[in-house]
Length: 297
Image (cartoon, rainbow, N blue to C red; front, side, top):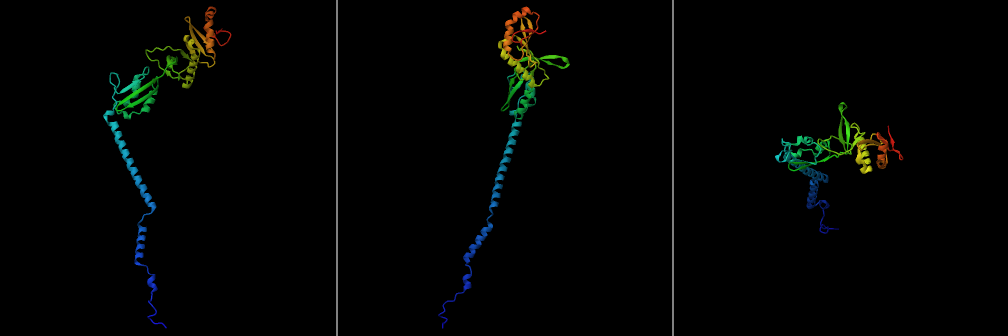
């Protein structure tokens, strides 16, 4: 039989199951912290937006700076290209080099709109294309020298022969032609010691004219000094080159075929005295046969 004193202290199980106040407070703090921390995707978006804002600000600043600089280059009088003087001496800030046969007036006309305004506005590549359309101009280099000077370097074409160009009304005019097949106007007061090239027409394509000129050049290169007496070269027939030589105040037409030009000319030169004695009225000679020279009636 037990007494109340022997039973010991009585423990209430419900009291031991309740959480302590310190644990409850810590749990509330952790829950609140989780709710206030933004997700990682939101942080990435904020960083991307900040970078985009910086780039946009830099771009706007650059555009603004460029616009200010361009306005300065266009409107500041220190960059203005002076107009040519009325005495045709040109502009003190505009220099042309390499000009011999091309027209200075035509070159200046290309740049007419560029005088009395900023050199910054000059479209260099466009002006170069316009210069290449000027007679005798093969190439051109335009240099813009700050603050207000322009230098134009001209490379002119070199003629290699005279040609006859048909004009309107049946009139013919003597012109020059260069290795590229470009027909050039004969400059006034000029003197060229060149052969006459026939078989080339102004209406032919440039490539066709170029091929015929190159054929003439190959011939002259092959015959060397023998070509000094040749006054005219006819390239009309691809298979039969014809030349006119001046001998003792006489003009003789020689048919040379399409090869062995030097050998055939040497053969003619060595027999010329005999030909003149036996055939004093001969005007055209055929040299294409290896063992003889025949007269063409």
